Length: 423
Image (cartoon, rainbow, N blue to C red; front, side, top):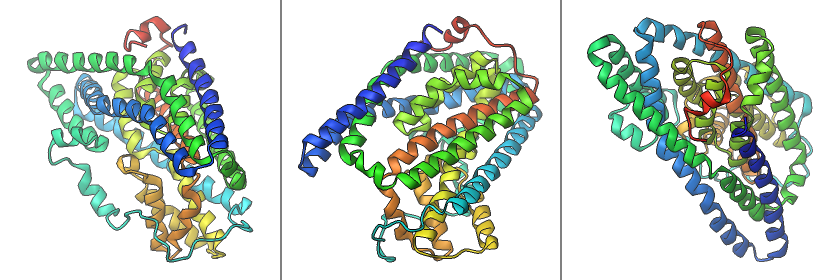
């Protein structure tokens, strides 16, 4: 614990300092162009940190997942784990979307905004035409594993790693040497991750300072009703996810939440689920989840179990319909919910993914896509909450699947867990 607590504290301090510095810059620099330039230069630090994460994420996912499947020994075990994980993902997705729909209808966040609405034909600049189920399914399978890794297509890397790890497991003793090499690659990537994570507080400071310098704190007041409602929805979703975990793993779920506080803060402050992935793996190691489960379920979760992002989709769509005074019947809302259920899968690799999914959904129901312009100014603040929620959802899902598989051991002492990553 001595190694993880200071970093968590430093991240919190960095967030506070970043807000303070960003607010000071925003208030003292009247020229918006100059403040935008300053914010852009500050954000270089965060950009470098996130690029370092992207540098390792594909090899980390591939090596840990391939070794995990190889250690399962046969394809049936991997298939069983995959089916259990997908069952949880589908249920969690439905809960997230339904909760968002119910709360949005109750709170009516888009009604009586008191703000000028963008013209219905205004362009958002989001490319939605190619975002279809057909293209998503075809895109799952990589044309080349090298290309998939180079482009950080996590879902494609996952598919290749499943085939690769399955083949290693099927070959058994004859592939033991190669399995050991891939295992060593995983350890190397985790060691590199430990070095990169030392930069997390600096990246968090830069991220907060940059976004506050550009937008200031006033924008939070303008959209306080919507943001407050959305974060209230996230709190309700966290409670449901924890309750779901409690039903299967008991009181230990509260220990899990304590262990993931660091990746939670990292995902929140950088608005990036990917930034939290390596630390989530280590937290699950310490919690007692066997690596063969966590290295399989976690990458799947990053493509199919983005609970926070899915809740945001329903909040945003209904916010826009309420803002434009469009009445949607319950049947239409349920149809929209089911459409979001399908189109939201695999959005992790799409830039501004949630916005793209929302824009595509609005087009399907002839709702002004321009309504998204109302939310783009605060999207960074909203993305922070949904990214952190995605981390919570995937941690709970992985622990539950491990429990189902009998692969949840007693908690590992911190020193043993830390050997897997140079913290």
